[in-house]
Image 1 (cartoon, protein in one colour):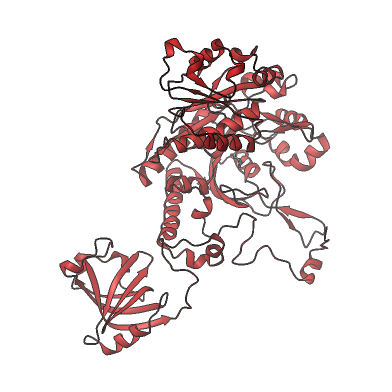
Image 2 (cartoon, protein in one colour):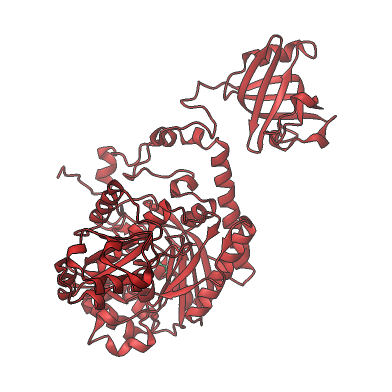
Length: 596
Ligand code: ASP
């Protein structure tokens, strides 16, 4: 090796050692004869000093060094004098006195300074990702990600799981997104689909008798991107035979609790991880990925205001909707402008409006009068209703109630976003906590209004809840499934389910999804067939690795933990993907490109 030590590893204990170092020039300062170079490698930075009295040649070379030059040097580790010790550097107690040096490669002036302090525009970072990744925080993210994956591999290997690779060139596997297609050259007009997940293959591995499978699997989904989505992403995909829901949940709880305790010991968790049904989660938090780091639970006013003079409330209920709200503790003095902002936020999520009711600080809960309230709806709400609302919401004097009246999905969406926003504003979010939880009993189907048919909420291989099988033909919308999610701090980390393992039930579910027998045969014939050859009961889950790493690091954007992510418009600005290809290549693939 060109180096005997890493720059960032040198400490007082190394004083007196002659070392060979190689790395990148972080900074060079010329102090009248003495040249100081901060040399950086993957483990950190050390200060190197060049003095013409120790070596004229080395000093001449140091004089040529510039930022991001790759250099090699030999020198002795020396203690710094008390006044020059730098407590901000891990290597700040020592420096290296260089006696030999070589420039291994020069560098252009980089488009941004390689430092965590520099605030660089994201497109530029992605365009020069290889420079961006030199920054200490990005190096840390990639190293941390490696440790997460290693922990997972060790944990599962110790529990008899076998890591098995599955193909990337595949037939379409539905997870509810669009497929990325790959044209076949040898089969004109035919396409592979990149896997949206290895779902069917892992189930077939169970039929194959593997019993415990996992894979750090790349998945591809062509859908609209957000901060927590990429066109390709990584899942911890796992599947087990002869299990029930609790077996999977207990395994994942042990894995995530262990992972967190090992890699972020300073973070707290709610243990055991709370387990909520989907219905309960929507009722209490308006979402199936609740942030349980704070309370601020939703309340329901339907029974109190069903006959109200206030038409906004009454009509919502008459139309089959709901009137629900949340209590912003101490928020009664919220300014007009802030309330307008919150109303705007509510509108952006589809609410017709937002009704606020402020309870004066001086109010006495046992003797409430109309004077104690401030609300645009005050004229229409009776004192009895107002008292009922206060009691139901648990409001205290000085609180602000925010109430939404609409159809259930809108009410949930709006209150979810308001709850997150207000928790932020009120400083309720404990950033030293990872509040993992499981959400259970998802509905098996959801109604697709556009297509006028049922879709799977999870995927078509999910088993119906044992207690609800009787409802399959009569009330499919009410059938719960054996699907579950792992959520944390308001993010969905992963989904899974106990699967169907019998041909008849699988065919019945396909039929309910509106897939006729010939299409079932054509798309899923292999699954239906495999289930006839002794398929064991099985189930699994697939937490997202990118999200897991991001949440453990406290990052809100998964691109910060992916080495080479795509932009929000699914492009790679470094390599230029996706890009047009020469006509010859298209011809070989039997493809002609139209402009519409
Ligand atoms: N394949 C599923 C997904 O990607 C996970 C699972 O059911 O195991 O969401």
